[in-house]
Length: 611
Image (cartoon, rainbow, N blue to C red; front, side):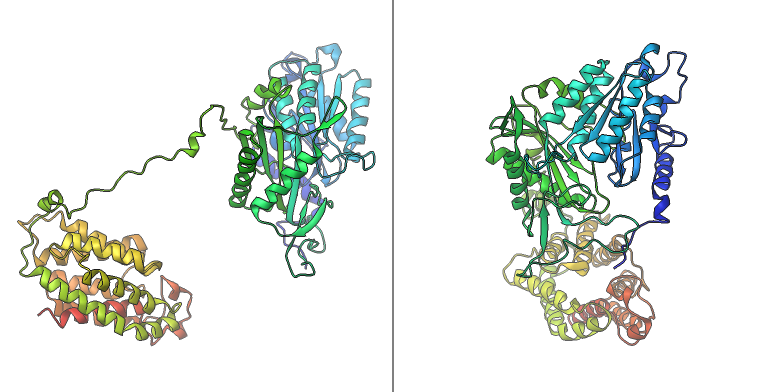
């Protein structure tokens, strides 16, 4: 299957990416002429008047193949990179562009230049090309050094001379070295800061689906296949170009994935005095960078972060004081993630301030640091504010306007019982109509609400003495039983009816007040739900019924209006809301809206009792 990408000509993709990036940061970035190089705008200055940034601080460059964005151009900014050299898709940049970038951000030593550090991921092409440019620049009189980052813990230490790959831990090297340079440290000190992080960070990636590069003829489906048992597969330890990892396995849970990642990183360890020791120990303070490899949702990234931090703290006894989660070094659309772990003890303490210092690099978010000895403030919940005291107590009841309707509680009980019974009986009809013009659940939903109200009525859980608390109780019953759009709309209507009655300007609540409260409830349904009369919804029965009630205070008239309104929906060719909005005219015609019919059923039941 051909991949689906936002793409023009793949051959021009890097050029178009650079153009799009410059449009986003018109004041922050500049392109180096004749090269796929992006530089901080401060380098668009004279090299002769002392204003060149390298006269004040060491410059930093990084780069590599395109496709890992925001690495590396996203880290150009104060206290981070001076510029980034972009190669082709997953291809090392040429020596000529690297050398051009060095010349652009560095002054010769004879002119007071502070030097330049190249931060390079451990891939053969990058090492050779950046290394060649480094030596050529030094021969031209620039002071240039190079640090290679090899933080991937997926490769066996003794497997060949290539060594571990450079992955997302490289971003932390950018930050530490950039912070050191921003503080005015000399080139050797900046190199030392970079090496401290490079030697102390360990990373591992996992993927559920492999990367498909722009311009590929087919989707890379090597992880889309199932094993002999028909189980979905994933891969542990693959690289940022989709290179094979440690192993494939059946799909694991988030907690299980985190356990695999941490075990691999600890097993790989780090080298101290020519010995391999665990990367971190009980009691260590840690920084972790949870990196989206391109195609993983933000939601899933937070789940993985939770699993990792929980196991590092509860199982390993560490304290994770800095948790960075996001897209730091991606692989186009790879559905995967990596974690980079950096212990903050020993030499790392000396560079921690460089990592924490602010930067305006667009891809770096300020770290929210937890350093106290107490629990994380974010783990302490804010107490919920209690609701207003129930009107069932003496103080609440005393504040309610009096009811001036004869035998209100008696009539309310009979009306509610009758309406509930009518809706239960009407369930098959409502279901039939909704099966045609909706998703088939209207009858069952209305029946659930009717049964819940009926049960509360018989159990004495509805406050029948006063309409305001009664409407509130009806809203609670609907909320607890109906669900769906109909449930929330009816709950809104009842709650509005309840609150409207509290603001009557008369000496007490009359039948007119009930009619006006009902009208306010119907208007709330329209306001919050967005539908109007004529939208082919329950409002086509509610609005006419409420208008008749306000005009005549006569249930008989309201019942007629509700029935007529429900019937008119069968003649409407288009629905503007609800599931019916997706149904064709041919299907809609001749079948009334089931919600409107339910309203009509209730009013008919009321009209049979109230003269």
